Amino acid sequence: MSYITEEKVQELQKKACAVRETTIRSLVASGENGTGGHTAGPLGMADIFTVLYFHTLNHDPKNPDWEERDRLILSNGHITPVRYAAMAHAGYFPVEECLTLRQLGSRLQGHPERTKLPGVETTSGPLGSGLSQAAGIAYAAKMDKKKFFTFCLTSDGEHQEGNTWEGAMFAAKYRLNNLIQIMDRNNIQITGDTEDVMPLEPLDDKYKAFGWHVISIDGHNIEVIADTIEEAKAIQEKPTVIIANTIPGKGVKEIENDYRWHGMPPKKDQEESFIAQLHDACGVNH
Amino acid sequence: MLNKQAKLSDNILTDAIEMKPTRDGFGLGSIEAGKKDERVVVLSADLAESVRAEWFQKEFPDRYIEVGVAEQNLATVAAGLANYGKIPFFTSYAAFSPGRNWEQIRTTIALNDVPAKVCGMHAGVQTGPDGATHQMLEDIAIMRAMPNMIVVVPADSEEGRKATFEAAFNGKPTYLRFGREKMPVMTTDDTPFQIGKAYYLWKAEKPDVGIIGCGPLLYEALRAAKALEDEGTSVSVLNSHTVKPLDEETVLELAKTAGALVTVEEHQVIGGLGSAVAEFLAKKHPTPIEFIGMQDEFGQTGTAAQLIKHYKLDSAAIAEATKKVKNRK
Image 1 (cartoon, each protein chain N blue to C red):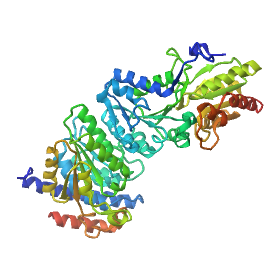
Image 2 (spheres, each protein chain N blue to C red; image 1 turned 135 degrees about the horizontal axis):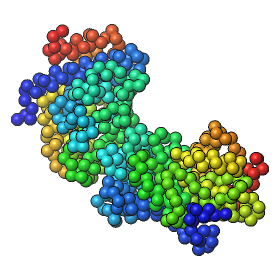
Image 3 (cartoon, rainbow over the protein chains, first blue to last red; image 1 turned 30 degrees about the horizontal axis):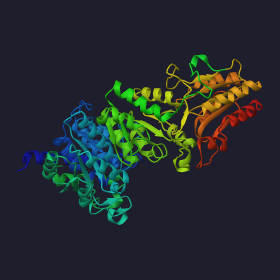
């Protein structure tokens, strides 16, 4: 039995399409401004961000500091364009503001900053330090018997960082079952495939050996994402890692699975054709 | 002469002076802060006894967090705790924290602007027998270069206690520097202390030279001041325990009154208190300065007393530098 209705799944699929569109438009605007941006990672995580912001998270966009909110920690800060897009569509700030991405004076910094934009829980970008911060928050929540969950989104590449595994040990030792990590397993990093640059596999066995509950999923199946998070919430005594197998650049065939799109924005003359592809895929008429 | 208003120990400059490591001040101050506010937590990376985190642990076992030998995790877990609303003091040897985890402190504490407290123990060459690997001598430089970070170097255990307590409630990322060896307890419970406010330990009406220092070497500066006074050179000794923000008003006043300065610190002369004073005065009131500190070299194994003599950090070296700078006026 699923935790989510078919109607809700369809609604979220459309929402994911809008989040991808805003992500592309913000990246094109940044590219036009000469301030670059990452494309593959954000598009690959659009479905997960959509499920989190429009289904899973217990949050209030009009009151981002609400004490009881679920925390969403983005460790691999470079994919922040999709977080900004999801936050804007969820009502944290106007969608048009996404077009200020990476521009001078913008609240939407190239890598997200807590002190700049309400709703961004942590400043991130330097890889490997998100999981421990999320663990610190989850630990504090347990001290105070708080009911909220802390979600930490990580990349596969940042599992080459020692700090990530230090955090993994800590979370297991203190049985932080209120901590749910979602790892973007898209197999690419800046210079190539993860398994060529520095092999990570077997990630599931590694996490099991570190004392975590491990679930591997298709990171683009809305229903599966939503249901798996519910399953993770029910796990006792252990933190859970959801290894989300994703396609970098998902939704635009020219970008999908091409590591060269890791740190490059689409050009202005590609914008409409890329967005048309998204619309075709989710059945939007244009 | 000794500044009466500083209400220093009656046993100062005598054999009866009490000796305690400044890290003891952390142990006491953290317990005081913990009693006042239950948000205070203490973290350690497998060094609880040595860094005096064990004292807090015994008092508040539920608020002590062991992270294992993992200094990057130490800083980032503390960042998460502070982000949530706790007041975490995280402890290790300064060579490892902030030495090893500097970037984590920069991004997840300073740029993130969460009030975690970095407590670096065993700083300075007087860490002694452990040798150069453990004698952190670059921490003031790397921490004061970081926006949002307060940097405090207590002179003795009593000041360490006060600095720890005050840091708990300043709402800011803060670096507190402590040492391993027993050092003279020159200040008392009544000595005024406020982060950001320097004060005189020794004050001459018309000083020939001003000495500005931080940390336990200030006791060597006092010994030098006494010897110099006996020889007819008058000095004032300013305790600039807060390296950042520097108490610019008081430093400027001393520079103007004395016309020449010696800075004293158990740290590289590159980037420490002396640099902070020189950077400020170069803009406001260019003043001849001699810099007592490590002269761009690592330390080595030895006793604390042997090492401060060898590296010219002791009272004799301070007196010599004072005479030298006096002649540069």
